[in-house]
Length: 309
Image 1: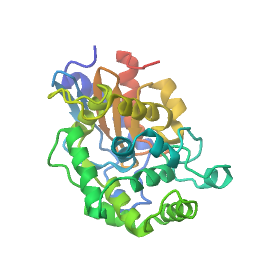
Image 2: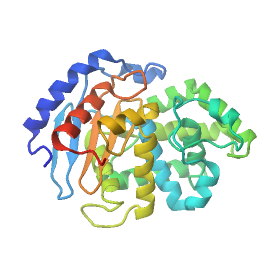
Image 3: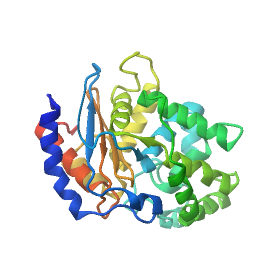
Image 4: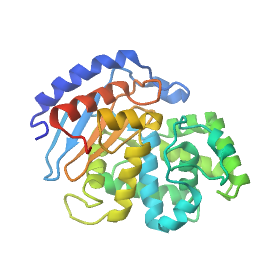
């Protein structure tokens, strides 16, 4: 049985927090450089409505790459598997999340998976709506629904900071446009994508969203099927194979739960059928994952046998 008290969980947070000193915050996005590297928080959501938490629990973080799993769920609901996977593949990659190298060398030019930036841009391109604002509002509404928090918004400061500095993502967009993976104005797609990455959640929101995925897409309170079972299964599979950038293999061995990270230091975890886990810890390792957050998940997984393997 997982932690039964906030105090029990706090001891693990205190142990893991020491590892934050070995990392650093993401500073290539200027707004994220302001994050506190010593912050660490966790929430664990149970299907029966209980939630235990520890650390700096009320701090918000922007989703960054965690948003990729939410946008993927939305476009799979919108378009179905065949249409989505004509634009993006299903294979993990050992390359960094923002690499363009594989695109240039593949016989069929399409991003290898939806969790690398090129693939995420192709997925975001598929969000339905008449305007960029409509499309973002649909994604935001979906994010509110799966997290159970109608007050979720986004950081205009972070979105603008990313919009001004995302030159590599623009390059990926133009490459994708050249090969007919996307067919919209690059700046409009970039505006949508940077706002998507700037959606803000607390560890509680992440844990609740993680629980929806853990329960095969079902809302634990209303029992409503928010995400179709097959879509939830696909998303969890990508979390296992590609969710932690090019550290997914080591993560699977050491921790072994479906999870998605972001360079703000967030981690969304989904222990199938059991728990949703939300973590925030802005200090990152060299792969772009929360260094203290990973240690905390490792401690939890080993102590409570959470690995799916």
